[in-house]
Image (cartoon, each protein chain N blue to C red):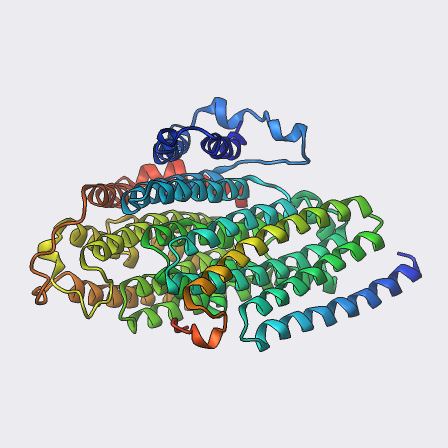
Length: 476
Length: 106
């Protein structure tokens, strides 16, 4: 039944695009929002009838197998939350019903790709759904046709296709060695010939391709351009979930169920993760634009997830999954704040905006919550995920990497506090005295996301026991 | 695998590597967005060729055919999206020369 999470958004897209009256098309945001709420409810209430039933209507027509486990559930919930936020904020920001209609279609299409990516058990299907998500995001970025956005979209297209080429090369090599593309068969085939040069090359190529998609440091050039130039509600979606699913989650899934944790690959992944943390944080310190800073911060936080993943112990992978969920929540919150500021002030440049705290109290305070959660200050949710990651690193006797993870939290706090001081605290500039709080939709979304961050932090025993720690069994 | 298919594989691989170098050079050397897209096409074609050869060598021709057909469809979709972006760039700036578009710093 879990395949319904792929089929349902597809069905919604098809129904919306039937030649009905325009009045029906106006319902698009409503339908999209309902779908994401349904997905979130399915994960939270976890009806056994839905998740345990292995009925798969797609299997009758295609060689399409899928499976779900605790790790997929974390991803489904993150996708649902970020998608819901993107629908609300996008429908609020776009006044033209036609554009709104396109936005919902593209968001749902990207969701089809991501939900499928979370479930598939075949390397080639993984690639196909990666492209579905990628094409939807190309169009989302370029949708408003701003000059920077078009350029960012083109950069993203070129790098994304190069990543695809790397993954396909790797796929070809794996087919050469094992003759199959499904996870199980490839894993068995790799076990039979572990020292083959082709296998090493295939692993490295696939991992590099995923690094490009995830925007990890040596391959991060497109991230700041795209996040800063795309409309904020698209950045919410991209930074919150698209790059996380199409880069980090697939890396997780491949390491867990295909390649296995091998010492040399682990070394590379951990080094790249630590590099990402430090370079992202240092570059964020130097930024003068809010959205660009958020993009670099995103690179840095992805570094944490990748570092934990490279560690490879069950606890570390659970920590990575938790941080992925937290990152989806707090980074979306910060980009929603950026959307609110952009709407009222017309810019997100930190030199031109100041003293918004007294004018936009909700935006100011929710951004404080988000940045404290990012930096890992207790009792917010970000603290617990970073704690899990650092504990796992210490348990695995990776003291150097644990120190990097710990001290980079200070850097995170530094760049975010300097942003907060310049933008929200202090006296307003001339001409900024009449700024009002962002619209009710933005404020509502900000409060919901801040609530999730605080709630997950305070109720951490529940969240950990029912939601995060089961992920350990996936690795074991 | 039989000897003749091994030699076929290495010949084809050499050709694939040449095509990839050509594609990457094409992307790096040009200032024209359309030509960059052509470079991407060359890269994708190289990979497609490799998949076909791999299918032939390992006797999994049916699998390779299924993969390649899907791949071609995906490639067309990506190219249409990319072409749309290039067209919008042209309509906006009246040029597709990268040197006049560098608004974003890396």
